[in-house]
Image (cartoon, rainbow over all chains, first blue to last red; front, side, top):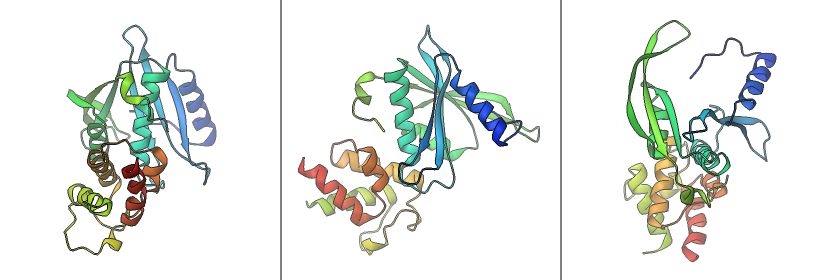
Length: 147
Length: 78
């Protein structure tokens, strides 16, 4: 989780560049082959190569109207982390009031490890508790799930 | 049980649909329970009912009950 300092085109370009340089991680844009505009992204990073673990995240635009796009993004995130990066575990940090993301992660097989108290400070300076999730990855379960 | 009945059973389980509902009302984002999260629950219910894993394009295309029946008919045949 992070709050961008700026969201103009230059700042976004720099942000994507930093994501692409993440050692051992990945960043991929979700786009429709029919409608073209980006609908979101998946990313893995930071990654611990020795332990083969990493933090995974997805983001989907509110304007993305396709059914199941978040679910597909989550499946592709786990598949890519496991098959492309060789990770054996993904982790995620989610604000306790982000119910949709919590549901999405639980349905994708993540489990809640615990609560990080006052872990995230929002743009207004308010602190929020954050749930820590983990998802063990089995290469066998992602063989037929390429998005 | 027909494919249509099996698909409806999944809808009933995932989206809390009543038995007598006009099935043409079951449209993604038009039917109140069929939200993005509801869609995940529905896909999981269909995958359990048909003991399969849905293809990405089929998940994206499943925007109504009729479309779901059309898609799941293919899976039932395999």
